[in-house]
Amino acid sequence: MLKDTFGRIHDYLRISLTDNCNLRCFYCMPEEEYSFTPHKQLMQVDEIEILAKLFVDQGIRKIRLTGGEPLVRKDAPAIIERLALLPVELHMTSNGIRIDEMLPQLVAAGFKSINISLDTLRAERFLQITRRDYFDRVRRNIDLLLRHGIPTKINMVVMKGINDDEILDFAALTEKNPLEVRFIEFMPFSGNKWTSNQVYTQADIMHQIQQFYPIQAVTAGSHDTAKSFLIPGHVGRIALISTMTAPFCAGCNRIRLTADGKLKNCLFSRDETDLLTGLRAGADVLPLIQENIRAKSKALGGQLTTDFEQIDTDDLTNRSMITIGG
Image 1 (cartoon, rainbow, N blue to C red):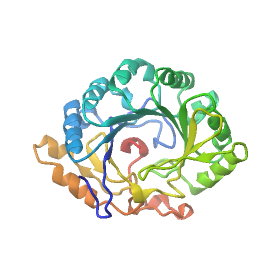
Image 2: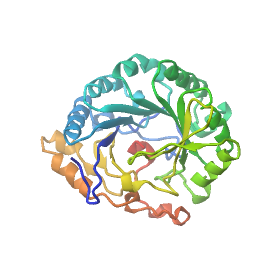
Image 3: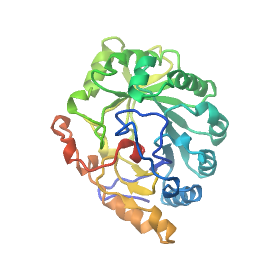
Image 4: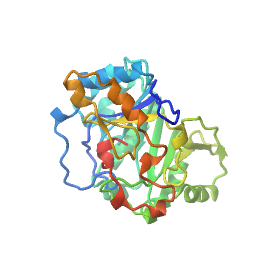
């Protein structure tokens, strides 16, 4: 059991497979031209399996694969195949571009859910945000997941003045599609040019939706990061992730393993623990894991404040989103 000093038990591990991506979203990647981590410095298939088994032995019950974009790794099918054999729920967050190419492996692995990151329903705006022209393919692949009965969620990062005018369009997707649309407050990371006046808050989002739809709250679990709501007559549902204005740190059960084998006990943690170097040296890395969890701060990595308008990004020490894995 992995327990921190605040009594929180951690049973959810997010594993980043790579910091590489086939999109260039400005809020995730610092620059268009980016030096990705060489493959030999990434966790290899066997190493991912060894560490995953170690975490499972310590009580991990849920594993989410992230990136960058996890499916750009050539050996992603081998990783998925091995992790699918572990006694855990397997989930993934993807940009959706390679879903069609990997569909047989995804179906065989029995993913409990796949989250697709999509911040706009307009092709021209997709190109502006991602700097790549894959909008139609992503939309087709969302439909493909739904047709194959794979539980699907859409992650929309809401940014004031950029895509906040599409909130109702995203909510409308739930009318006939059995998916969950998750509206996420814009968060600060190294190099993503975050400013507080770009944050479209949970209250803003709720106000806009309630002007058009009646909504019913869904009872949340103790570890849920998203507050879920039903819209009467819709087959899907909506959800809000309010990291900036109403964080959910008290029930946090999540830890993150970066693609280069560093353990982060919080998305916003300043420090991280190198597991990969120890593993390759033949060391027992369990004490490193336990020490990392015990060092976890009470909230927001000990760096951020819930008064998001007072956050100075120059004072933050963290990676870019693409190298953390979300």
